[in-house]
Length: 259
Length: 158
Image (cartoon, rainbow over all chains, first blue to last red):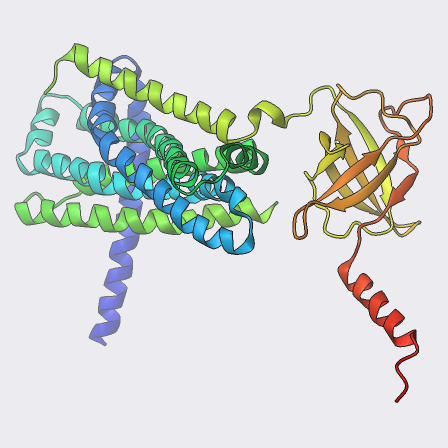
């Protein structure tokens, strides 16, 4: 009997939390309009979540591209089609690895920092203090961080894919001796602007919204103690990684279904 | 915290680099520069069998890409496949008795349409139909033919 009750309470709690998160998202988005007048707040957050994440994104992009080049070459050469290496590297990066790996790294590097920062603000009653001064903490603190994440993610994903293609070129053409002309021409023949590249951009925008949403909500909803902030940071990374991977499957299934 | 000037500089650099990367993906990796057939015209061709031809396959002349397949449908009366294709407006002087055949690039490659120019003085216009067509080679039929021919050959005397 008690196990069923536990199950019930888990379901009720998670639905309640989801509802709170959705209302919070609505509040953040409506609060974002006021930021047009104070856009510098958003610029600051683009710096915090975008520019400071740049290094890890570029380094991982380069290495993912180089590994794709090595692995792809060894497989393709068995079928005598090593010339398609550029196509393989570009498609895997633009369609999947670029948006997904960027979102995972973003959740680990920037999402956790956002949650910890907001959670700590709540624990030290800075958010309550703002409300006392009739400053809405959602528009002043949360919305700029959310918007910063949404703006930064597609740019980071594009940089990841671009540097990854260059990494693949470095290994494929420079190290393994694939013809440079074939590498680029096969890539351009096979990669569709609308189906592949635009799709990757849409994916990264969706991931940007979801990861930033989870990060700011977990921070705002954290239990205002040190343990509470710790577990909220933990949940941010776990939930946003799971959400990214699950959404990635759904988005891929939706976009590949019609072709 | 960095001061306002260098922060703005960094964010500006970041956004510019991101947009540059998007541009590189679109033009250098993707085919935005060559993709769209501008002011093209549409022609049709009926095939007995299109094999593995797909929408967006290339339409070539002498191996050069002149357009792309935009649709494949089925003609209920003739029991044939109708392939519509967009040809780039740059190639307006294709004789209207040209023939179309479905070819395969390489042994396992994609299938595409090859146009073979005819000798007529009139050129293909929007909505025209190519009369002479050659269907795709279907591997199973070829194998079947080979086996059939072998079976009809007189075998060595036992």
